Length: 611
Image (tube, rainbow, N blue to C red; front, side, top):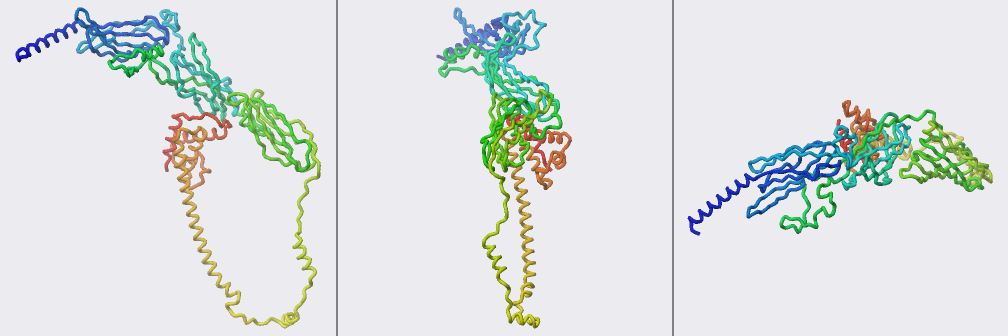
């Protein structure tokens, strides 16, 4: 093609391009339609915005409407040819998730096409609180508890209890099955002043609540208060993954065979789950309302055999064998059954152990429920009679009955036995045969005087001619400086050992503090172990600063050592109280995890303790 013809062709093409662009701009338009103008809470509705006369446009990723979640879930292009005229369109798909009942207005949206701006029409959506019921008549009567995708419920049968009393607790987590939920972190009871046993899942069933179906998972546990006062149990916290409306720019899965930007029809998520093509999986937190709880102290003047057992119990006792010799063992088996805090149920006490030798008892527990509130605890104690006896001594077991609000003492029935033989004789001193023969020989042999020595002693004292070095006084005089030198050397060695011992003690405390700080940063320790290690590292740091024994350091001593302000003193005092609660409350198998907020608070407090 020659030069002039080439430029003419290019000029004609440019003219045609601008004419086509002008025609497209003149025919640009936008429409917006809803797949349904009526919906129910939780049921999705589709919104489609179509821009004609354009190959590209700018549409919002999210549309903000109170009570509705509206996210863009896809974009596609469409081409139409009519009498050799090609018309292009851009289609934006949105998914609407109604969160509550009412009549909602979706405002006009601005769509930019190049330098032009287009506006969508205003749309209205009516949402009912349940399927088949219009929302127009309920605009001013929306229920306070509008249905949700998930919910958590804490059930505490008693609002008042005594210190140490075991109170059963039930936790219910509900999930809308259409959201295909997946529990990521199990429920956890928050709060202070009580301990909780390990959660046990007890059931899962489908329930209808307020006209909607929920998959309800039930957990059981038990709590025990460590001190008297008013507390709040909860809230319950958990994490789950549910299927919700897809977020902006969320990628859609495609087939590896999609080489031309066209989905493989058999890989579309719609064929696996009709709801999944309009949503994405999201993590959400589940919280419940806290429950008020009042704890009363136990009455004074507890029986001597009371060990902290609270509940309602019965006791049976048996002994084998019933016919023995003095000194032979008798196994006494005591069985305590009922409902209460079995971790505080100790072996019955022997009321009168005179004439008996008793050995430490063994125990085993068999629970009758999921959390160990009811069951049977069996003790075996070996008694050995030191004299003739006709019955086993009485055994006493005391507990506090919260229903009767009084202490109850159970005593075993008399058990007759037959003990033969005399009392165990007391030990007498025995003189050995060799010592006796020596004594006899000493008494039988009279002293015989030596004639010559006798005469010399009668004449008076004889002068000694022993050399000086052979005399005892000479060596005694030599031993005095030697003993002084040895004493000085021993004193120096002792001082060095004392210094080394002190240095080793300080090094051991520094190593212990570093090891405890390393353990505090782990995530696999129980709350009881965590708070014990945290209070221990405070004691060790204070002991290093004051050069004292760590076991003598309390919260006030540590606060004075580090010069803490009022807020830090209170935080340190609560740390020591929580450590004592987990150590002495009796519920040793509480929650297996400590919340990240509590962990950060404790670490921040301990790490900043410096003199």
